Image (cartoon, rainbow, N blue to C red; front, side, top):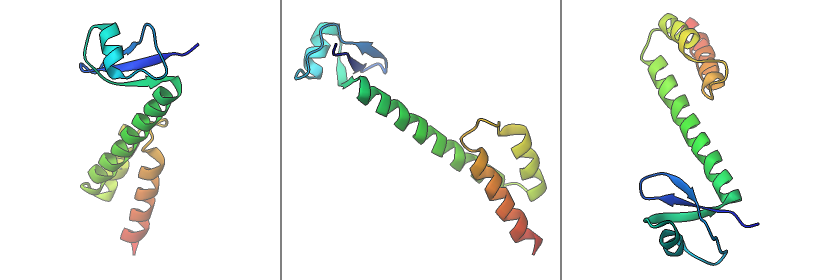
Length: 107
């Protein structure tokens, strides 16, 4: 059974009631009674989800490392311990950034 989803102009995602493989966003918009930005099948929706997770993870890494770089080494270590959870996508990158920094600043 074909399942297709539509990204609506308000940012929500809706299931298209009668999806057809060849139909476009305009058809989905007529079925849903709203403006549709684009349509996705189940695999495309999963890929979009993975891409969003990757983008947000990379942003979290960049922001965390930039913040730690603005602190003294000791403060950055404490900030890391207090603010970067074990399941954070930034954890490994932050740890190794601190490790490199400690080695470089110890010279």
